[in-house]
Length: 172
Image (cartoon, rainbow, N blue to C red):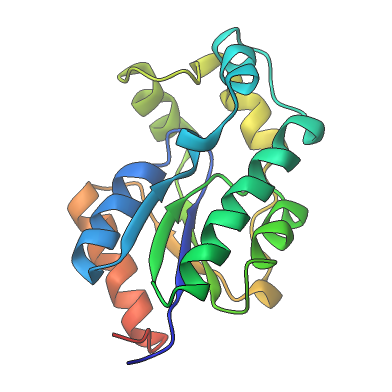
Protein backbone atom coordinates (compact mmCIF):
# COMPACT_ATOMS: atom_id res chain seq x y z
CA UNK A 1 0.00 0.00 0.00
CA UNK A 2 1.36 3.41 -0.92
CA UNK A 3 1.41 6.38 1.39
CA UNK A 4 -1.82 8.39 1.50
CA UNK A 5 -2.05 11.76 -0.20
CA UNK A 6 -4.25 14.77 0.53
CA UNK A 7 -5.22 16.80 -2.54
CA UNK A 8 -6.64 20.27 -1.90
CA UNK A 9 -8.52 21.68 -4.90
CA UNK A 10 -8.29 25.44 -4.43
CA UNK A 11 -9.43 28.66 -6.08
CA UNK A 12 -11.92 31.45 -5.74
CA UNK A 13 -15.67 31.00 -5.53
CA UNK A 14 -17.06 29.86 -8.86
CA UNK A 15 -13.85 28.14 -9.97
CA UNK A 16 -15.48 24.72 -9.71
CA UNK A 17 -13.66 23.49 -6.59
CA UNK A 18 -16.45 21.33 -5.20
CA UNK A 19 -17.42 19.75 -8.51
CA UNK A 20 -13.87 19.12 -9.68
CA UNK A 21 -12.74 17.84 -6.27
CA UNK A 22 -15.69 15.41 -6.08
CA UNK A 23 -14.98 14.13 -9.60
CA UNK A 24 -11.27 13.70 -8.83
CA UNK A 25 -12.08 11.83 -5.61
CA UNK A 26 -14.39 9.50 -7.54
CA UNK A 27 -11.84 8.95 -10.31
CA UNK A 28 -9.02 8.23 -7.84
CA UNK A 29 -11.09 6.27 -5.31
CA UNK A 30 -10.29 8.79 -2.56
CA UNK A 31 -12.48 10.19 0.20
CA UNK A 32 -14.00 13.64 -0.42
CA UNK A 33 -14.63 16.69 1.75
CA UNK A 34 -16.20 19.96 0.69
CA UNK A 35 -14.57 22.50 2.99
CA UNK A 36 -17.67 24.69 2.74
CA UNK A 37 -19.51 22.06 4.77
CA UNK A 38 -17.26 22.87 7.73
CA UNK A 39 -17.88 26.63 7.78
CA UNK A 40 -19.40 27.66 11.10
CA UNK A 41 -22.90 29.15 10.79
CA UNK A 42 -21.57 32.66 11.52
CA UNK A 43 -19.34 32.50 8.42
CA UNK A 44 -22.24 31.39 6.23
CA UNK A 45 -24.41 34.23 7.59
CA UNK A 46 -21.70 36.78 6.84
CA UNK A 47 -21.09 35.54 3.30
CA UNK A 48 -24.82 35.24 2.57
CA UNK A 49 -25.16 38.89 3.58
CA UNK A 50 -22.38 39.85 1.16
CA UNK A 51 -19.84 40.49 3.91
CA UNK A 52 -16.34 39.17 3.10
CA UNK A 53 -14.73 36.88 5.64
CA UNK A 54 -11.68 38.13 7.50
CA UNK A 55 -8.68 36.11 8.61
CA UNK A 56 -10.22 35.81 12.08
CA UNK A 57 -13.21 34.07 10.43
CA UNK A 58 -11.15 31.84 8.17
CA UNK A 59 -8.41 30.62 10.52
CA UNK A 60 -10.62 28.45 12.80
CA UNK A 61 -12.36 27.07 9.70
CA UNK A 62 -9.01 26.20 8.07
CA UNK A 63 -7.84 24.58 11.29
CA UNK A 64 -10.98 22.41 11.32
CA UNK A 65 -10.28 21.32 7.73
CA UNK A 66 -6.61 20.63 8.53
CA UNK A 67 -7.65 18.49 11.52
CA UNK A 68 -9.99 16.45 9.27
CA UNK A 69 -7.18 16.05 6.73
CA UNK A 70 -4.74 14.91 9.40
CA UNK A 71 -7.20 12.32 10.71
CA UNK A 72 -7.54 10.90 7.20
CA UNK A 73 -3.79 10.76 6.65
CA UNK A 74 -3.13 9.17 10.05
CA UNK A 75 -5.76 6.54 9.21
CA UNK A 76 -3.96 5.85 5.91
CA UNK A 77 -6.72 7.31 3.74
CA UNK A 78 -6.15 9.54 0.73
CA UNK A 79 -8.68 12.29 0.15
CA UNK A 80 -9.58 15.25 -2.02
CA UNK A 81 -10.68 18.45 -0.28
CA UNK A 82 -12.40 21.44 -1.89
CA UNK A 83 -11.15 24.57 -0.11
CA UNK A 84 -10.53 28.09 -1.38
CA UNK A 85 -7.11 28.32 0.35
CA UNK A 86 -6.79 31.83 -1.07
CA UNK A 87 -3.64 32.95 0.74
CA UNK A 88 -0.27 31.30 1.19
CA UNK A 89 -0.74 31.56 4.96
CA UNK A 90 -4.01 29.63 4.62
CA UNK A 91 -2.29 26.94 2.56
CA UNK A 92 0.47 26.80 5.18
CA UNK A 93 -2.19 26.11 7.86
CA UNK A 94 -3.58 23.27 5.75
CA UNK A 95 -0.06 21.89 5.20
CA UNK A 96 0.12 21.36 8.97
CA UNK A 97 -1.96 18.23 8.35
CA UNK A 98 1.19 16.55 7.05
CA UNK A 99 3.74 16.44 4.25
CA UNK A 100 1.33 14.59 1.93
CA UNK A 101 -0.77 17.75 1.35
CA UNK A 102 -0.72 18.88 -2.28
CA UNK A 103 -2.62 21.71 -3.96
CA UNK A 104 -4.44 21.86 -7.28
CA UNK A 105 -5.13 25.47 -8.26
CA UNK A 106 -8.13 26.03 -10.54
CA UNK A 107 -7.29 29.04 -12.68
CA UNK A 108 -10.39 30.69 -14.20
CA UNK A 109 -10.88 34.02 -15.98
CA UNK A 110 -12.91 36.74 -14.21
CA UNK A 111 -15.72 36.80 -16.80
CA UNK A 112 -16.15 33.03 -16.60
CA UNK A 113 -16.21 33.17 -12.79
CA UNK A 114 -18.92 35.83 -12.87
CA UNK A 115 -20.96 33.82 -15.41
CA UNK A 116 -20.78 30.71 -13.24
CA UNK A 117 -21.66 32.55 -10.04
CA UNK A 118 -24.72 34.16 -11.63
CA UNK A 119 -26.03 30.73 -12.59
CA UNK A 120 -25.84 28.88 -9.27
CA UNK A 121 -27.49 28.62 -5.88
CA UNK A 122 -24.86 29.16 -3.18
CA UNK A 123 -24.37 31.21 -0.04
CA UNK A 124 -21.49 33.09 -1.71
CA UNK A 125 -23.03 35.93 -3.77
CA UNK A 126 -21.51 37.37 -6.94
CA UNK A 127 -20.92 40.59 -4.99
CA UNK A 128 -18.08 38.86 -3.10
CA UNK A 129 -16.16 37.80 -6.23
CA UNK A 130 -14.12 41.02 -6.14
CA UNK A 131 -13.06 40.46 -2.53
CA UNK A 132 -12.16 36.84 -3.32
CA UNK A 133 -9.97 37.92 -6.22
CA UNK A 134 -8.40 40.68 -4.12
CA UNK A 135 -7.58 38.16 -1.38
CA UNK A 136 -6.25 35.50 -3.76
CA UNK A 137 -2.52 34.89 -3.67
CA UNK A 138 -1.89 32.50 -6.52
CA UNK A 139 0.41 29.66 -5.49
CA UNK A 140 4.07 30.48 -5.94
CA UNK A 141 6.40 28.23 -7.90
CA UNK A 142 7.99 27.18 -4.61
CA UNK A 143 4.67 25.71 -3.39
CA UNK A 144 4.60 22.90 -5.93
CA UNK A 145 0.91 23.42 -6.72
CA UNK A 146 -0.54 21.92 -9.87
CA UNK A 147 -2.07 24.77 -11.92
CA UNK A 148 -5.08 23.69 -13.97
CA UNK A 149 -6.86 25.81 -16.58
CA UNK A 150 -10.47 25.47 -15.43
CA UNK A 151 -12.18 27.75 -17.98
CA UNK A 152 -13.62 24.85 -19.98
CA UNK A 153 -15.98 22.02 -19.23
CA UNK A 154 -15.93 20.00 -16.03
CA UNK A 155 -14.79 16.95 -17.98
CA UNK A 156 -11.89 18.82 -19.61
CA UNK A 157 -10.81 20.30 -16.28
CA UNK A 158 -10.88 16.91 -14.55
CA UNK A 159 -8.89 15.39 -17.42
CA UNK A 160 -6.26 18.15 -17.21
CA UNK A 161 -6.01 17.68 -13.44
CA UNK A 162 -5.64 13.91 -13.74
CA UNK A 163 -3.01 14.33 -16.47
CA UNK A 164 -1.10 16.79 -14.31
CA UNK A 165 -1.28 14.48 -11.30
CA UNK A 166 -0.05 11.55 -13.40
CA UNK A 167 2.94 13.63 -14.50
CA UNK A 168 3.68 14.30 -10.82
CA UNK A 169 3.62 10.52 -10.16
CA UNK A 170 0.63 10.53 -7.81
CA UNK A 171 0.52 7.24 -5.88
CA UNK A 172 -2.33 4.84 -6.82
